[in-house]
Image (cartoon, rainbow, N blue to C red):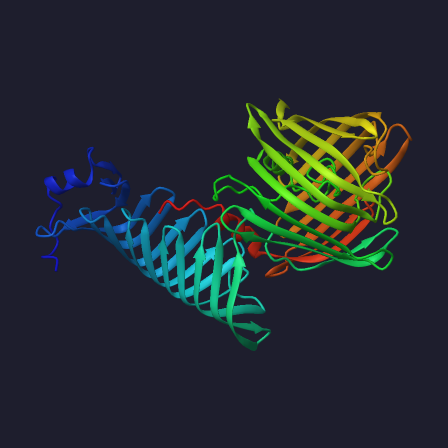
Length: 511
């Protein structure tokens, strides 16, 4: 027990802070060995144990985490602390309020009792929350996909284990939907690994020429660096499509880059902010292309369709494809490249053609050219070599973008393209040549609206119009995406836990 209020001896203060105490008005700051900084109004010590009690608007800071409370007891020898009264933990992943908190800033562990976690789009109340490097454990928790817990859909679980960046497991789970309790479900696992697609729900899509159908793509980890991806498509006016791929990446498991190489039948510039209305921002385009990647894959696919080509195909089959994808940053340049060895055909009655395909994308950093105005350039190359000869094309794109007011982004780009040789298949050529792309985004509060328009200078016609509309509705975000080219309409619901999952997935445990 503490013997009563006793001023902190000079010897103890010297231990707590290598430098002289800093007094700012009625508050003081002490540096505790091990990297803990404590700001407080008054303090006292137990002369026998050397423990120090800080009181009065106490704030303890370690690395990225701040602990605020009314009273903090610190044992500088064991590097342990105990917080009581108005406990609040502020962290990049969210905020925790608790009845009490014990933590070890040496071992980077902590235990909170009567805890409420509020993170982006996630609210969790737990009887006990344990945090340790590589493992978070929730005991008897309940929560919802919101910041307040006041939603028509909530869940309860006896326990939850979260391995940041890898996986999570909920045990003995109940759901409450509009007041009706459903369950229990013994186990619910889900992936936090951004390198793997994970188990996704099928999407409904309407495509020109083939009608309304279903598309389903998912991926699963195989070992520490491997992944198996599959894709299934079913549309009324074409044969069912199937694709299967195994890929391996030697990169560190903590890398956020997807293991599987991109497919070459999908939309070529789906990652471009000036090309696809679903790309959130120029920064997200640069982050995607500049992400460090090193992947090797083997794949097969049957009756697959191409997307956004001058002339699309619906019956592309690959007996075998070997692929290698590399990428990253070099100086101020983001880049991504791929080489593929393919045995491929276009149509059930055609023979398979062996060929080599090479692709390269380069994206320099945006250059500021005025107040809030940025210049951005991008280059894309494509080439093939087969028994039919050589073929290739190049595309260059230069654009400007700005955010004149908060939440509004405007952009305009000019692109030019040229091709040489005879293509092996009708879907090989570049879409468009000289063109102008215009875009406006509005993202503010619960509302998202994006609009993209493209004009072909060679044909003197608008050839594409795209828009996305979305609004936050409690735990979900319903959305509508319309794209004239490729002809596609998507209606769906995003779970708002995604942003929390992304943060936890990229978390580097430093507590």
